[in-house]
Amino acid sequence: MAEEVSSQMNSLSISETNPSSSATISLVSGDDIVFKVEPTIAKEMETVQSFIDETDGKITTIPLPNISSHDLPYVIEYCEKSIAGKITKEFEAEFVKKLNNEEVKELFLAANYLNIKKLLDFLSQVIADRIANKSVEYVRRYFGIENDFTPEEEAKLREELAWTFTGVDPDDEDEN
Amino acid sequence: MMVLPNDLITEVLSVLPVKSLLRFKCLSDPLNTLISDPAFVKLHLKRSKRQNLLFSFVKCHEAEISESAIYSWLDCNLVPYPIPRLLDNSSLTLFDGVNYYLNNKGCRRIIGSCNGLILLTGDFINHKGNVGEYRPIDYWFCVWNPATRRVSKNFGHFREYGSSSKHFFFAFGCDNSKDTYKVVSCCYDLYELTSDVKVLSLGDDVWRKVETFPVVRLLSDYVYMSETLNWLAIQNDDIGAEKIVIGSFDLRTETFNQYLLPRYFDEVSREAVFGVLEGCISFSYGYKETHFVIWQMKQFGVQDSWTRLLKVSYENLQIGYANSNLSSRYNFYVMPLFLLNDTLVLMSRQESQAIIYNWRDNRVKRTKVIAGNGIKDTGNSCYLSWEFSKDFVESLVPIF
Image 1 (cartoon, rainbow over the protein chains, first blue to last red):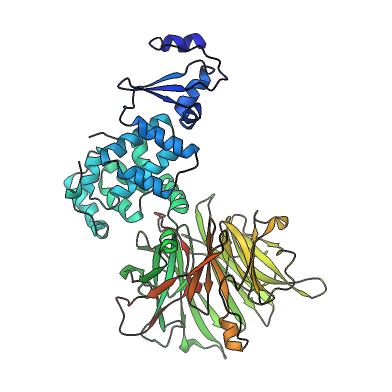
Image 2: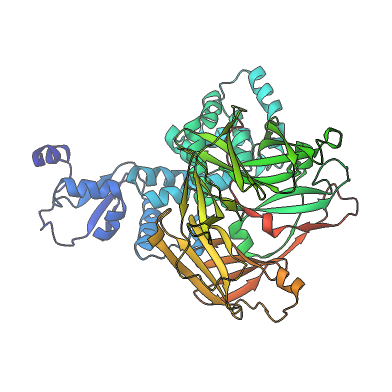
């Protein structure tokens, strides 16, 4: 089992430290930047933790090819606050204020990849809040959804649901 | 632009408000199907209950008077309002949603809500069909989902010869294992000392008599909890003494149970209140005219799990109990509305406002909720009925 893992990970240097020590974990972003974090942070990231567990703690450098060095610090910041029990409404409001719609989406994917339940739930609510009053066209573009209705089908559905099209924000507020 | 995988899109959709979701049925054919899918409807409901709790204010308006209906002088309007916003900013004016009036649904009274569906009832006194001294009264029901604006046809019609000794209690709940919504009608006859209980499953439109309901006189509005309907009820024990118990009707098995109240409530005054707080059955009462006490049944149906949640003095709640004349005693009525973390919200009848009480730091503030003029208003007065205002959740649950 250990051999299998090490052969998959042959591009990585394997640090042979004592598994029980609290050595820092190195997270390597997709663009090859190394972020050193405390093991408690890694615990918040289920994907990372299960990787560490599978290798009995021998591997402490984890490649995260799907996550950029732009997004990773946000993820780490959120996990740090979470461990400290300091996730407040104020913190969350400040946290997302810095992020544009594309960045929120990228972080959402990162949280999903790393399997961080709290961050995932939080970001799905953030995205929901941002699109709740948007037009159908805007949301199609935002999610990359292909419209597969025939024009007749769509017109019929829109007519049935006409009351839900009131109070929709104009699309030009789009920041992207 | 980055494209999200389908399961993440589903995650986002599951926390959207119902109105947005209905609009987003137009996104694509697969998403239209998803949003109507029973599994998605359940997921959305679960998230709504956790993250999007609403308080539905009931505003009553004077309406045109027709002689035939019992409740004709009022029309009610439901105004759902997010609970966290009410706690943060307790001064607000409520305006009517045009689709939230009851009268245009052919029913006038709200019985209760379950999973975002509201059961309404209507009644009509038939002056022509007197039998002896009794006038026949027709009853009927409808189910309404305010979030999707769907209203069912009227159903469950029945006629009762209105004797003043007969008291009707209607209740509404869901057997989640079968996704079956049920209406229960309990009729207690004060003279005959009999009770007559019948059940209707939504979609059937057939009343079925339930034989196993013992004779108990119901005292309170019902409370829906864990697929059961519960009332405070009077039970005569073996030696004929009256005892207050919880009468509970299990919607899955359609059988009756009863549970005891907390042991230590000998000194209960008459203002006992039965309800739900944080997902537990609650029982509250005034104690020695100085305190208000709230109990929670932590584990439903388990007598030993009664736990005293709170004993707070009226002084701390800044409620005066000075007057002892009858009308002010009637007006002295405190009812817990809901509980959110450290914050308890109570209705005070004498103030017609709610008290927001944080027991951790003993802070008290009052709501200032004003019933704003309605769209239909013709200068008639309108007021807020706190006693019928309840917590509420928006859902996509279809009308059967």
